Length: 444
Image 1 (cartoon, helix red, strand yellow):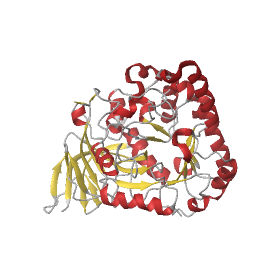
Image 2 (tube, one colour):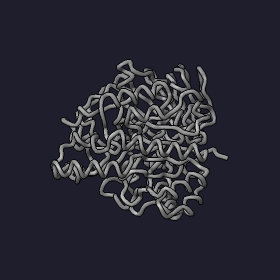
Image 3 (tube, helix red, strand yellow):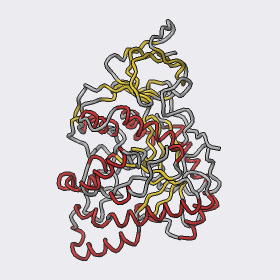
Image 4 (cartoon, helix red, strand yellow):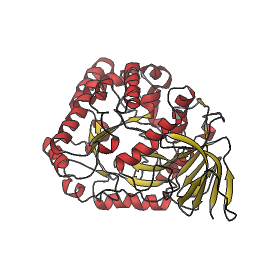
């Protein structure tokens, strides 16, 4: 059935316009000041904002193999409740997505279980270059390299292998950048002094700006040497922001960067209250680092805002420092968290849409998504800017059942989420009769 969204304040491509929008099937068929269609279901959006669906280019949904933490079904469900209509998921599952066969196994799970649109990164290791080079750039988000110790045996630290991947891979390479040796040296020093009871506030001392910068600068040097399309994930330091350009449009950049919600919201002062719940890799660092990341986002040196959603059980997170895993759940609360900065006057709605919708679509060359345009897929989010709510155990949708935002009062709510024209989330109620689609990429 056709759906007619009336009286929408459409936030898109740098402006807010009052208009109606008609959905036919999976796509937007018409946008105009006034639309009348007797055959359409009418949905009145008076007083609400209509945004393109959020595109999250970095999540860990834990399936296969780590399903006690989360599943594609549960985390995609939480994502659409948070306004995320498309996600790109990382390869460090069990087994790791290091072959084309294992990669396709994840796509089969997505097709069966995901309420949101999905793509999965191909993983790189020190031994699988041949498999990496088989990756279809039109149907896979990119290749993921872990140049840090977050991922155990997925660490790629062989310089010859790195040179080969950067020189031979013709699609986007996304990189986690932390220098392994720096982290090991710092860890050994701290463990010798404090043992297992190392206070969490030392996490950014172990995973410091030197570890991040050394790895990020090496990745950029390799990318420049081989003219590689490089995307650096979750920038966490002031020092790294100087590595990126803002003097050319995003579509012309060969090297791009991303910031994550937790590095924009928390800083080292937050460890006293949140403890290991905000233990991430790279670490949440100083107020100075947080402010520098904001500055780089605002002047377009950093291009995208994502989540790095990475759930663990509460029991796992409440361990001592060295035993507590890094990562936390964010997809349900990412958009409303960014809307708090809009309410504070720090950023505009148009800017949020640029960084969370348009920029990921442009950066990854997503086909027909990330914008509200006639002919594009109807991935849409309705936001009520004046409906405050408090994050509680009762309304957290992650399988892990906790959030670093628990107790936070958000001023805005996600009211409705459309995925490919289907109203999959409507004021707390899910329609699970349809599934999301495999993302496609408009690459030559």
